Length: 201
Image 1 (cartoon, rainbow, N blue to C red):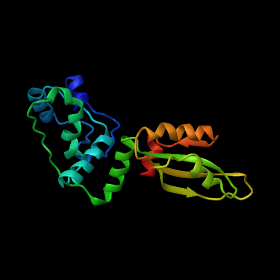
Image 2: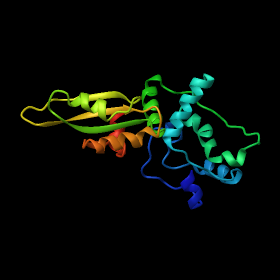
Image 3: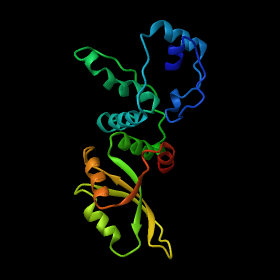
Image 4: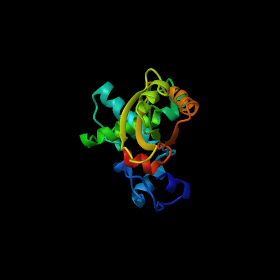
């Protein structure tokens, strides 16, 4: 719909992410566009991670079960905070068709958006104590390893491990990277690659 508003008519978008499945269409309908164009002042978009955080917030604080598309109106509020301050605002929250099996993915996406969950491919020396040194020297006092997958390679000095780390505060990320570089840890950030991250969650 945003693309249609910019073009002045419905357009076909070739690549879309199906996560917010209730709003994931490649082309808006002619009638839908006509009505929206007539009655709306504008359209906006929100990051999927913020949608996930909104779903969790609505569930944890208000006991409301909402699907990704149903959370869009609440998720968009942050972008209009200065405009709506002191005003009465109505958000339509529609759609509770949220499969419980999706909650782990929703939590993962939320944590990544909030800057609290990071995945790394770390090259460890294949010797006793390598992991202990990583935990003691690299991780902060409140950092937590939530995923660790390592397969020992025979006849090699090093081996890769998938490490998922959850932080308690976004600011701890800078310290984590500082320690990784300080102790010459060979690593690759997997969060930076949407395809790899999608595979992980």
